[in-house]
Length: 378
Image 1: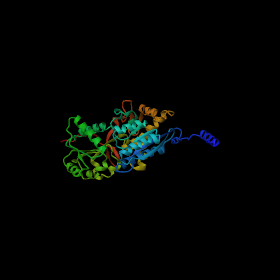
Image 2: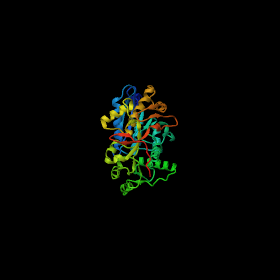
Image 3: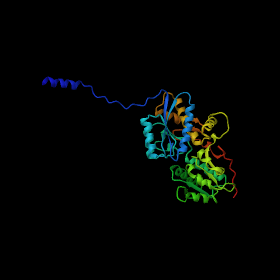
Image 4: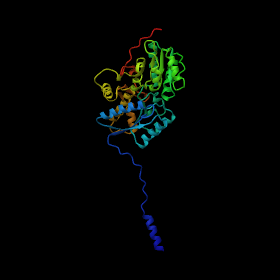
């Protein structure tokens, strides 16, 4: 019995300890940057997400040299909750080196916490206030003009054309619409004008109120995705006495083709570079290639193309410094001439769009410059 007990103790003491295998880290190719792109690829905001994906795929098909961008597209499907989940997954599970967010959002406390957890450069392609003003702003870079920039430009164009009042402000219940409306009404108050009470198109009488207001308004300012207003705009008059309809910066080319005769009365803020003439350079080359595949690009699509170009430029500038902290610093120090704008960031400003590149566009089978303002006589 004593012999058996000693044998048992000997085996117990010599048994190898259990080894816990670490969670495998995704295999990384040398000199490759992993980029997660969060877009609305389904649902009501899909046209914006699809146009951005098309532009980014064009960039990927043309990419040459190092670093290589390994891009993973994720459908957010209009869900704020899914945005938070996928942002965290991109940074922690997928070990992304950079993230591009191409959905309407606002940097609230919850999203700010996710940015801090991610600790990698996050590029936003749609308008938001300057991220540098937020607690997590050191990791976040805005490529689109801020809502305040767009509001200021819209009010200035209305004044120059003599169409400031009477005005109708129209919105829906989306976050993007609310942000734009708030920025525009604040700009009107700054100018000493009393903004009219917005008409919410999603309310029962919203569409009929917009159509009836078109008979007396000199201008109608819409906020949020244009697709929500197509039916209301189609019911508006055309001609010299028609109101001038200001669409959102979020306007997509597909929205404009659905307006039929009312294309003549609409305008919207966008990037002048995507309609400027020329045969060389990144801008004209992008416009030609995108148009051949998908039709004329929107400013938002071109901004998505610029997002990948900027990440590539930051990685190329320091091939051995691709960790999140150093890559963020490289983005912050870049002055980058993109398709949409000449982006420039500092440690105190993370809204890189150059306001000089913001202009008003009209539709003539493709985006074109709006004619210079000529005030309308009362």
